[in-house]
Image (cartoon, rainbow, N blue to C red):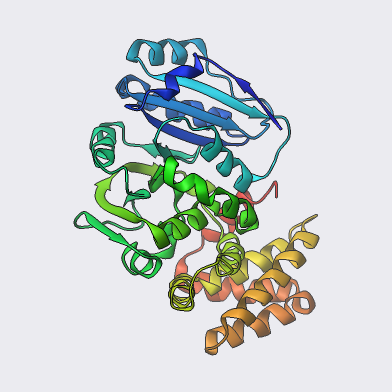
Length: 344
C-alpha cells in the first residue's frame, strides 16, 4: 500500500558498490531536511539515500538546493511515501523491503550521522557478505575493538546496554541475509523494535560485527524513547522463536536496563494529562503484564503495587512519584516527557 516518488532513476540503487542510508520518517520533515542539509556536502558519491515517508502531513519533499547539492556529490536519492500511516514499526520494515543494495544503514529521522565516518563504516562491509549486520558505537555504548561473533547470547553479552541494542541508527544490515527474517519483523511489529527482532534472529544463524566506530554524532533528546515504549517492546521481544538459554539472556538484558521509576512516572503523568487517560490506562495494563512476566524483586513488587493504586491515587500518586524521582534525578524530566507525548 505505497507509491514511489522517484527523485532519481531507481536503477542506480542496484549498484552493489553503493551503501544505502535508509530513513523511516513521520511528521518530522523540517528536522529531517535540516539534518540532511548538514551532511549533504560531505556525502560520498557511493551513498544512496532512501527516505520512507509514513504518510507525513505535510509530505517529505527535498528542496531544490538540497537536490542540487546531492546531485553534485553524485549521491542518489529517492522517497517512498505510504498511502496511509502504517505505524512506526511497519515503516521501519518498509526500509528492508525498498532497499536494493546489499548493505544499508538504518537511520532515524531525528539522528545525526557523522558523514566523515561513512568511509570507515563502508569498509566494514567489504569482504563481509557472510555477516548479517554491523553494530557500531553510540553515546549509549562505546566498543573498544572490532568483534566478530555469532549466536544470540553472544550478541546480548557483548552488544552493550539494552538502550544501545534498541538504537536503530547504529545498525548496518546485510539485506540478502536479513530479508529472510522480515516476516518475523512483521509478526513482532507491536514490539516497536522490529529491527532488533531481525538482528536477534539473524545472529542465531549468522555471524555479526561489533565495531568501535562512532558513526552517530547525536540524536534529538526530545524524540528519545520513553521508558514506557521500552517496557512495551521488551515484553514482545521475549516471544521470539529462540532457545531457552537465549531467551534467558534476553530477559536478563532487559531486566538490567529497565528504569522502573521513569516508567511509573511516565504512566501516571499520561493518566493525569487532559485527554490522555485512556492511553494511560492502556499503558498501565501493559506495564502490569510486563512486571508480572519478569517476576521478582522488591522493585518489581513495589512497581506492581504503585501501578495497581495509580488509578485511585491519581494526582497524589503523580506527586509522590514525581517527588521521589526528581529527588534523585533532577527536575527536568516531566516536562520533557509531556512535550514528547503531547500528540500521542
